[in-house]
Length: 475
Image (spheres, rainbow, N blue to C red):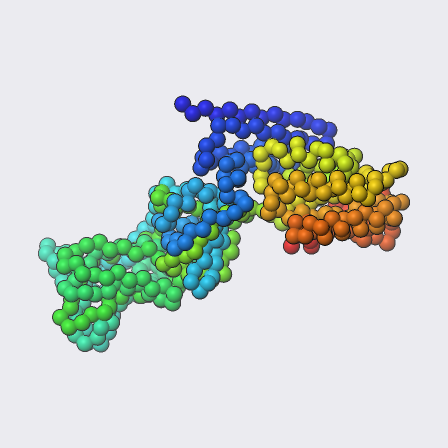
């Protein structure tokens, strides 16, 4: 029997909740999630092995094929050429030959395809009329002929005979033709029929960049299936084509159904940032009916940020408000009264517990270092570098934004430390970036009267402006 030991320790400091996780017994490719809600913050523990294995790189799926539903509300991949279920929780990018891309987040695995009702009007898919056959809305090219031919016992099939035009005959998949409703652009459909030929005829489904063909050579009825994503409401043609002298084709039992959920064989649901609405995050015009994609899987699609700091961060409402404004997850690990030296000595322990992989880390430290005597430049920057190194080692792809701090009666210190921060950013190019500058917006023209409650901590107006400043940086 496989055993799991899952020990959760909750610590309750005055300024909020702290979390430590100990997670054992997890095997690679096993999906395990733990969500703990405390106060206004939600922390999600993603399965450890997947984080290690996929977050800092990508898996390339060359020649990836699959059937895509791109319509908002029911977006998914079904019948993929590789099993995507082991990549749940991660971003997927598919690139077609144009090249255009579509980006989503892989979530729930399929449990078996489900379908809507048959869209063919009564008798139009079976070619059986009142006491006789019907050819429905099929149209021939040239002088080719069509008829509803009795296959025995009143079971009719559509017979297409070549006379002078290789293009054969076609029917529009539309309400105005033989369907009970037009198609939904972006929705995935399954079209089935049985067909037989004398000779070699193409069964073709086409409109725009949709062009799917099955070559028919069977002389007795066999079932044929198309999956396709609608790129038009009423212009897609089902066609029997590439006829030549003496060739005849029969077709019967047409059924067209919208695919509502993904297949169980590796099919997965696609979601956006919210994890609730089934939709692709972005689509640059990818051909959803492409026969082959280059696929990459890797990285957490949901953007998360961690806020490291002192009392300007610990429990402040701006953290949650920024997360809501950007549709990010957030983790506030600020501790009141802390200095850069405090964080340098404790950062390893803060980052040790398994937790959501962060895309962004915000650091606001420095005001508690402005006491007599000030730390030396070398010491302060070395301690700050320790924090940066620890964060970068934990999440190599995360961007780290450094706030230039300010508080009243310390203008000179603020300017001096802003220079230190500029030097840290320069020496950590591509890892660290300039965050907000409190000397500019928090100090303002009134020495912090509007934006602070005491010359240091954010007022209600300051909380709002902090969010605005960080949105400008992160967007």
